[in-house]
Length: 266
Image (cartoon, rainbow, N blue to C red; front, side, top):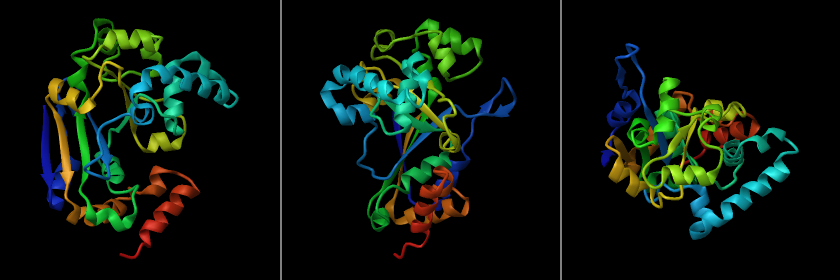
């Protein structure tokens, strides 16, 4: 079930930031939540592959990955060893993939919810932060996937652990059907992916609508709607916390984006 929470004051934002869950096995506060921020309430949970290839995503995906790997292998010869690595490196550089990206940090999600559009439009539309509990879908994983997670005492896969279970897209889609999906931590490709505290969900072809799936199969999913009239307050608060493009995108590009917004005249 998807729960909708409307946030119209900064206290609600602080409650989102401070939310934690207690893990009695280790006597620590370790959340199993992922977050995803989007700058427009009308944006849907959809992969870039679905947006780009629409109803032909199943047919076109293998060709796109094959051609990406053929040319990108000049810079990264290890891409040939794993289709999952091809996806994650490709996604990181703008290739349309079946990966849906998340962050473990609500602050990073709030940044993406309050950036990426013309600053003139920030106060003209509501934005969204999704919260997703990875344990919700792990319970529906096939047993061979659960065994790997249990053996490694974790909620998420890595390239190495996923490769122990499944090697191909066809096998993965057959295993998952429309009942579950794997959440995976990407390798530390560069500083950007580390700073963004990134994770991915690998969406199988059997799940045609992610939000419908979340509503049917999950119990802890929350859609936080942040009202437009507090978005500048949230944006300036994030800058005060040093959550900005300079940190999200290390380098001169991120610095320039951060300065442009910092000196934007309303």
